[in-house]
Image (tube, rainbow, N blue to C red; front, side, top):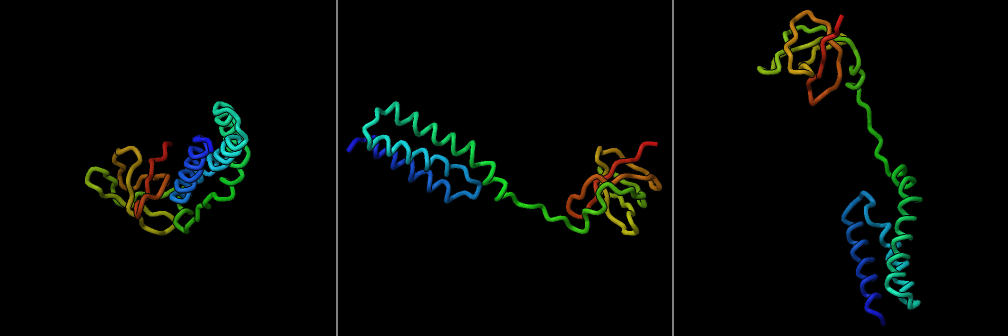
Length: 145
């Protein structure tokens, strides 16, 4: 038996181990490439040909199956009730000062702690837009008139 057979078996085993340690489908493609190289080795194809066959099979697997598999495994983002505030207008009810960590806004009748997106202070009574939620704070920016 050719030494290349052991190299291909090693590649297959390492790829399976790497794949089992991850949930991102990072090395399954090389298992198929390694199988192609192994079969080529058993058919006494020169080592250069084995490498070319393994590479082509791996690339074809990546090119044709990765988009399909990635789409199937895509984690859907679960929207929460808090997401409904993003993009809404709010009123500053307590001056926002990112340095001291103070500031509150009222949006849809609910009071939230808030921070300015650009580290600039925003005075009480100013209308702002909610850009994001980070933890329990709204990230806002002053609406330019």
